[in-house]
Length: 75
Ligand SMILES: [Zn+2]
Image (cartoon, rainbow, N blue to C red; front, side, top):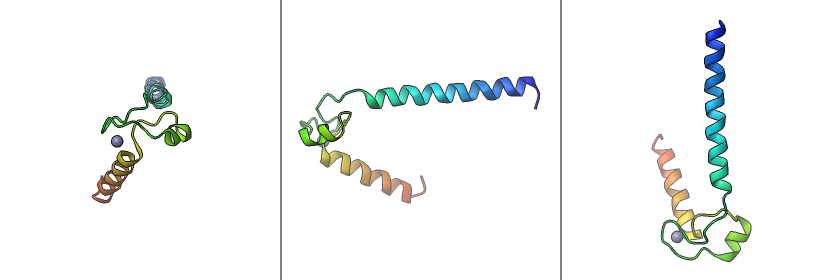
């Protein structure tokens, strides 16, 4: 591995880290308290457990189920 490869490797890692950090900051932002899927008010208990919750319990459960279905289909 020469210097150019090392620089490339570093740049890739740096970009990945920056992206991860940006995502983490987005996830950590406080919720609006309104479900992004059905615009219902998110349950206070849920917001207490997860202040960054973006969806009500119903929509979160639905999304999770959809995600698992997609994974099973080989995603
Ligand atoms: Zn909802």
